[in-house]
Image (cartoon, rainbow, N blue to C red; front, side):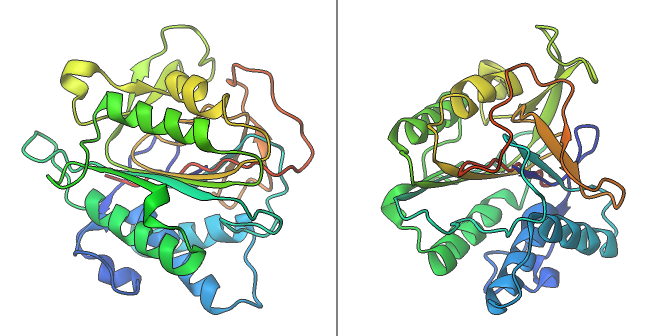
Length: 286
């Protein structure tokens, strides 16, 4: 999982993503995290003989964000103690099954705290997935509060995650993207020993249905995913560093050298050797 910031940080919108030199960016606004990620991976795609590692992607994202005045530190979370020098790819060698995606963009249209770039993030990511990784429209679920797609309510978000879990099999590739507000709630089951807070996603109907806690995501999305499914998740929202409650974390702060164990992880860690399942979370500052 790639997140655009640490749990204690907020993530930012960009008024004009053209400054990130993306090919054909949808709209003017977007998330700083998503825009930085796309800039890095598009550049990597143009240089097929110059493969980037996980560390390279996170480090280059941080350098770009820092150069544009953003203080957030991208973070990588993983279900396994993977070597951060491993080649980065949404579709790694040996995975030739179905490619599926769930993409969520919430601008909270008409609400307090309305955002402007989350729909554009999703549209830009869809274009990247189709053009570079050959994802097909029929295998991509898009939730946006734009009047055209299914609304990203709490129920619809969780149903989309549960559906992709049930459909995905060994050898398949999954991509997950969330651009919207993220939050923090006091931990209610004493599994957040580090800071005492659950990290959350904030659905469109949060005022009536509540937020989606990291505990919910762990139980409904992470744990049930079948062995042998390769999953990449970008969480472009505030407080998203450990929003999937994964056991290993890497912060692109220029100090940390590799994945470190998350002391607040509340489930048995999965096997530690590199394996065909990997989780990333990205937080966009919105």
